[in-house]
Image 1 (cartoon, rainbow, N blue to C red):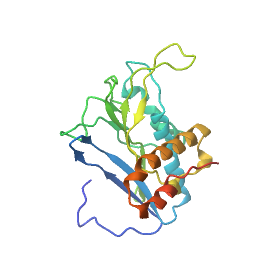
Image 2: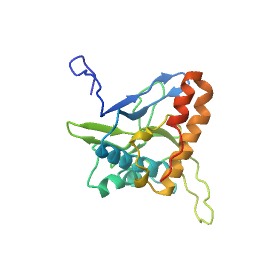
Image 3: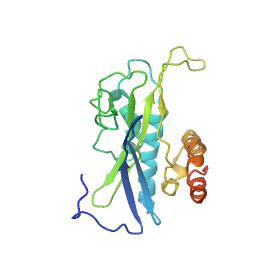
Image 4: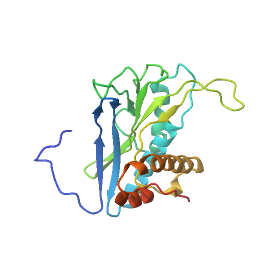
Length: 219
């Protein structure tokens, strides 16, 4: 998809705005997607967004043994959607290059992602849902693969991911009743980290918005 004058149109109340953005910098490359509600979203929009968010959180929280590849954990981002008879037709995550291509292997999270994860690999976490002729939803953060570390009372070292991207997730699209306590804990901790890191870097007149956008939620 490429934006053209022919496809441009005005955003209207009750719609979703999906923006996939990023940039190339001297110290790295960014890639982030957020979906934002324009006005009041429909119940279906909220439900679908929350199902996508559940997959995003599941992947972000994943722990896995050394030697694991993207094909083995792709289901984590899709299970909530699959349980509702839904899916998305793109890879869940791709490697990210610096000074080269934003999409760069060999690591990726998809049915064809056979390269084992190694410490320091950067990969995206971007499940989505796309309702034909209606709206699209995607939540994308970049993550870095961690060293294998012990788990309390466990017997084997496990890798995981550290989320790098720090941008609020639209809480107007989240149905807390569909989230588990663990998922709510992840979302609140993520937003607390976003607020703590970003607040000192934005103008005073934007801090109230940030506080609201990163507020804790509960059932």
